Amino acid sequence: SQQGEEDPQALSIQEGENATMNCSYKTSINNLQWYRQNSGRGLVHLILIRSNEREKHSGRLRVTLDTSKKSSSLLITASRAADTASYFCATEAIYNQGGKLIFGQGTELSVKP
Amino acid sequence: DADVTQTPRNRITKTGKRIMLECSQTKGHDRMYWYRQDPGLGLRLIYYSFDVKDINKGEISDGYSVSRQAQAKFSLSLESAIPNQTALYFCATSRIGGELFFGEGSRLTVL
Image (cartoon, rainbow over all chains, first blue to last red):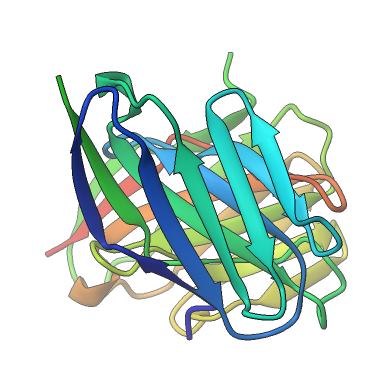
């Protein structure tokens, strides 16, 4: 079964707006990661947040993690047409040796110029 | 050259045929993974390997087998392909506690 569940499944916004995607998971985790996938291509890592961190920034990306609610959010500020892609969260469950990542179903983001 | 290389990139085959997807990496990572992607289902883990002598089943290993020939090589086999194994397959590598680096994918169609 999938560890991560993402919401919304699809999001369409105008260029310049902010995009927020959410991820919920079921078990305790070591870390949570966000990835981006352009259509049919390999996934590219965006950001990793550890279980003892609450917020992390990277450029226009802001990730939050609430371990009490087992949820995370990815915020992309001032979106651009080039941000159009699918975004996935992945969790490394705490019971593992480490490194085994389970992915959510993804959010498909469309940024219109 | 890409850090993670998958071959073939595209393959069409018939039900019952044996198929091997190959993956090689130049990252020097010990950990390698095979994922399957289907529309609307995200990525599901098939097998993963933390070193040459360590291979583990993932979420959906039935119908698949793997071989870790060397630190840099990890192959996925479908002994007798069936149509519901039609999917996009990704190989990935990582170091301990780090992010995954993905290949560009192998699109498999089973008729």
